[in-house]
Length: 184
Image (cartoon, rainbow, N blue to C red; front, side, top):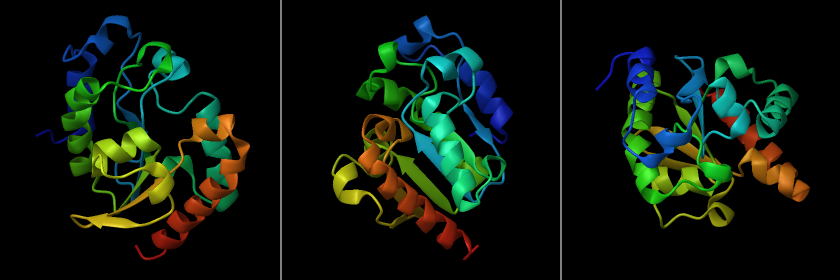
């Protein structure tokens, strides 16, 4: 158990628990407000994130920033992280053992930040956090409460770049988050 995000970051920087460490430029723990009421969890770093060492800075991140702006959420008031902390080769979905190697880091991040709401961006985040029985298509846009945290699964912003028809659902899901934030 860590007490500060910087402690986790130090351990993650030197992590060799899985093969993803072999090709990384930078680890990507997360970024944002350490006292955030809302935490966003994605799949893993892409090429831009690996280069810079920060989550959601590429095309998908820019799209997410635009959506935040549109509903009146500032990126500085949320915390953003991923299931895995190193870039999978060719941006492939992380393997089960890679995700499992990083989940303790993510659990510690959640314990430190203590968010009221966690937005699960895509199927990888959903299945690794809430369980294999969940699927993004059936769960998207529906609140799931566990251990005092409200989870909202939605599409990963990268999916919106591939299929623009999903943008309206993503937008509506973020509006649900904004509305729920009024309760805190």
